[in-house]
Length: 455
Image 1 (cartoon, rainbow, N blue to C red):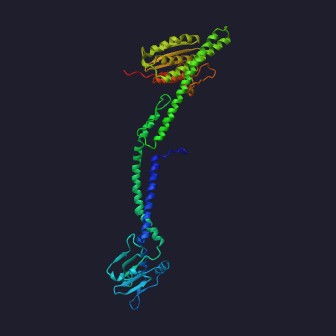
Image 2 (tube, one colour):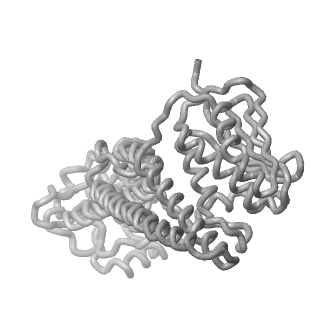
Image 3 (cartoon, rainbow, N blue to C red):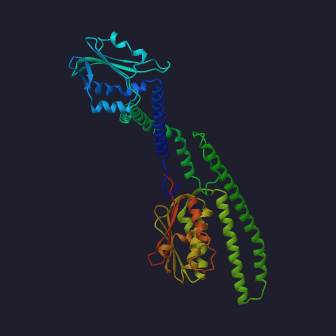
């Protein structure tokens, strides 16, 4: 694409094929004209002798004795001026002859044997040695009916050449080009469409490739040979990206594993220190590091291996999470409420993964609600789970941004910025969706919608 404009391959092929066809036809016609010219036939097609016949017939008359004469006319004078090799022979029925110029030997006596011929053209076959062309015609003049024999002379008027070329173009070149253009307009889209049909499959396969579906490659079946190098290059690039992604994933897993041991040692040593505000701050920092390493490992596990999907009761799972986190919420000054609109809610999922997602959302509410208040876990019909608080809420412009890795609305927050991203990945692997809406009390409400199994 250049200059923001997409070029159509079909349009380019059609326009260029028509241009090439027109040029080829024009060259062929030009070659035919040149061949005919060199062979003498083109000159006859232009018929310059017609002008001679008209000028001679207009000037022809009789003298007082009844003999044939040429009266001085402007048309004859112009003809003589531009055709120094002009020649013609006039005969009447009584055998009287009037001639002008040097008559070729081949035609010196031909008129006497052709008095009954109305008109004729004389020449030679293509490929014979060049010779003079002649035209014979019976004409009615002021001197009576006569026979005029003439050649084309040495000059062909430009207007006749232009006229002949125009007629030839309109009668030969233009119809051929129009027929070929119509065939090209009809056939080219069909041919190109069929030739590039395999690219539709390639495009559909390319749309399915993303970071969560590695190992995908573009098929080569049905791809035109000219496009195969491009598809092969794309597949090679995808292979390199997969390899780089795997190396990065292994590095992150190894780094998270390696971090957990020194963090554990650091936490043990900090707990052995005398109690002080500094010790509490260091323990909180160590807990943050441990949580970050754990979340990195969770992300890599989710990405590396599919979840173990089983049939589970979403109501029971959410109730268990609420019971486990109640002490933490109470210690932070919050009340934790659990509500279920149904007794059971069967979904297919990974209990550990979904439990981790709900836990992260409750912890997020504890960390970011802004003040002690109420946190509610609600299970509704349709596989819906909501975690709502009555804090300050989340601005609408930032509700998509908060799910990105390491994104925090408050830079002073002690969170890692990975919790909500981990929730999104878990929900995505379960085929569900997550959204942020306003809670009834004015705070934030995270709503998870999971697909329910068909009965």
